[in-house]
Length: 182
Image 1 (spheres, rainbow, N blue to C red):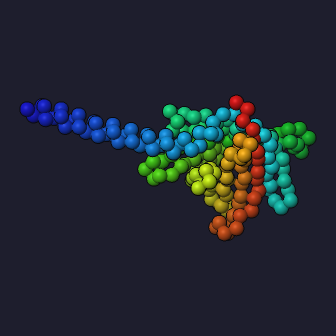
Image 2 (image 1 turned 90 degrees about the horizontal axis):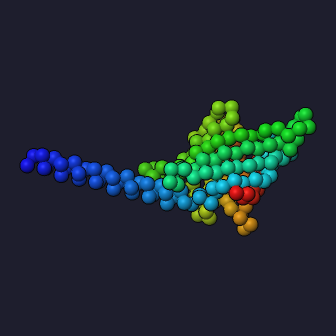
Image 3 (image 1 turned 135 degrees about the vertical axis):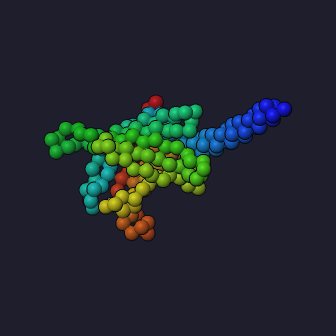
């Protein structure tokens, strides 16, 4: 009788754990569906500003892959300067990020790595208009945020902004428009 009761208890615990795990996965999957339009390979152009009136144009590719049944997105970006000091194209930006949804805390999280080994843990959200917004606090630049949306042409349109007064005013310092090529 004890053995039967032990087996029944074990079966109950495993069933509850399995059901809870499935619930978390479904929350993650449902939230991640909001950004699945990003999957694929994208290519286009943009500009970044390092100081007033100093726009630097670049070409950009982004490769976005859905992983682990849709609960992760990997994002690999490569930006090439149109012109460098030597007059030849040069890598301007190379990054890799992993985006997921934390169902326990009910928010998106992203860890973004640069080619120099630096990384940032960024908060992300989907706003009421379906825009994907991610950002972080930089010790020298201030608050940084990026807004990605799909425009009326189906393009990836991303803007970047900086705030040095804790989000009261924002200065646009980045923009790119990408077309889906795969």
